[in-house]
Image (tube, rainbow, N blue to C red; front, side, top):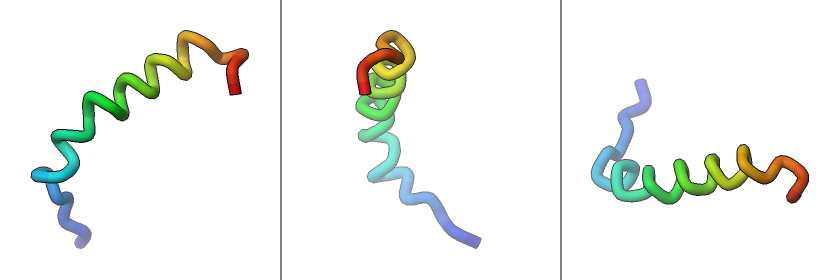
Length: 30
C-alpha cells in the first residue's frame, strides 16, 4: 500500500487548509 510521507505532508497541511477555507468563503471566485 501507499505510505504517506508525513514529514512532507504535515508542514503543508496549514496551507492546504487555508486554501480550502478561502475557497469555501468565496465560492464566487474561481
